[in-house]
Length: 148
Length: 306
Image 1 (cartoon, chains in turn brown, green):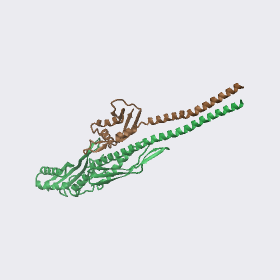
Image 2 (cartoon, one colour):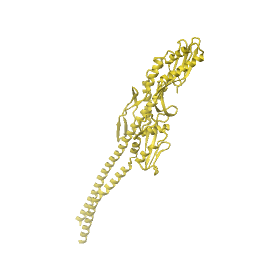
Image 3 (cartoon, one colour):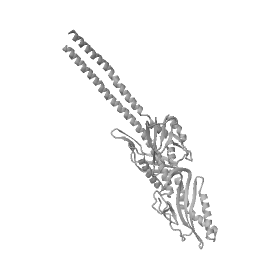
Image 4 (cartoon, chains in turn purple, brown):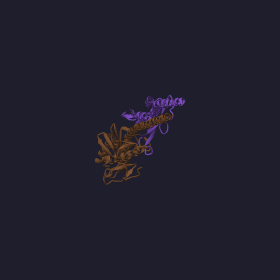
């Protein structure tokens, strides 16, 4: 009889201990998973789209214009892709260098800018259509920015 | 013993209920927070895309206006040439008739800009974007500044079905320092309001006297060259080409057909004319005139404008 009482007390004790431990651990366990998932989600949003927009919206001097107007990078790229003027757009590269260490900016036919230190893979990319000077057979060009 | 087992069973039930309660409440909270995070991220990306589309449409308005100006000027003030023309240049004057002079180049420029802008609006659309059509493009000319405003049929938008939608004003406007209307004014003043070609032909006949046809033709050419120079300045160039000069020495009388090109040399614009390149805006039109109203040997030469 005493042995049964002993076993009963032990079982009840184990259950209470387990319950207390679980009550304490479960929120931490689930919340930790929750935190990780949220952090992963935020990390996946890499700002690549913002980087492309910031690059394209920055302003520069329009060397095609006789008036040397200030225009967006966006406009200069469109003119360059459609007419080949200005003859070089290398002076725009430093703007992307500031935004990312590892990137490639593609047009539909070739790479326009590429980081000198590494090759960006397809880990994160975004696309944007920009208008080209009027041409009935090709009104837009799709730019793709890939960053690591 | 029995009481102990009941106590044990109750404890088990309590533990299970507590665990379930924690799990369910946490799951609901987690799902709700994740949904908010996903929506926030997606909305931020959509706002970015909206700004991007607005920038693109602003630039599309520039390109539409440049191309419309180039085309309408090249076609002597017309958007779609339905009248007699030669190499896409209409006859502003055919002897005494100036019936084909375009009285509404502004409307034609507006219509051409609108057509091109609508093509861009369609080409720049994304799966989730709502692009307006443009029913009206208003153009106001004040001196060398031309203000162009595109009026959208509805707002520009981004829509995620059953999720959210955002919208913004789809109207755009811009100002251009272009001499489009100045070119027209010069053309109208010198070749419609007064017949500048007929005047130089009369001068050439007067100076040549009763010379040979070749001598009169040479004198007319000299006078036309002088007219080119006198009408040109540092920013606007007038060229008189494709000259067809007929001479009747018996009267004497001279009839002339010339292509007048008035070019705005102040700025080149990226436009399409078989290829895309930076080109000046150039107004083209033909003038046919005669020193004698009874001498009309030059027939109206026309071809299809493509």
